[in-house]
Length: 284
Image (cartoon, rainbow, N blue to C red; front, side, top):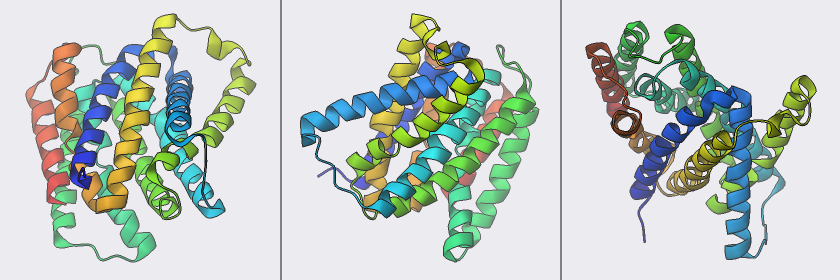
């Protein structure tokens, strides 16, 4: 049997690969990118679910509500902030900031679930704040449009991801991980499509280049399909704190993959900021 720790690491790898696909296909715009990636991820999971489970769903109403609430925070609101961040800064700068969400998850758990904050959290918080400050002030590495906007979007996405994990963990009490990954997508996707259609028209989403659909679709399948499933399994097996902590290896993997595939350049500020942020996450 595969351990929860390995599932968390597998999720981190999937998210790192997906980030490269998103970065290449982000020319479609933040909201269209979220729509396209979510649709392909949902379609992939649905086909896989029908093949493996025969399309038999079994879940409670409360589980459905909390999973869709988590999906709203993670896929739609968090997804829009995610794509806006990638539009403006490099993967090497963006991902370390995004992955402060384990800290935020712990803080939210303390606030909402009355859990005690350990001394390590305070130390980790200081390192993470220093890391974000360094990352936000570093010089452009090339191809970056607006560092302040990108950093702000990354911080916002981290907050939204943290809220999502709290809601999703609650929903997972009543629904197995495979169904959870699929169930959390349709309602948020429909709401975002209706919002986008009201502003841009119902056919606008079908007018982008084929390359954008391929790249964002692959990113959705790898990151939201496989990545979400692996992470949901790890949540059920080892809990939110440990799962998110192990998934914090994503910034390292993302930077390495971006260096090879996107030819991104690193400078001292990026290295120091990333090191401080990752150290803070691991201490927590």
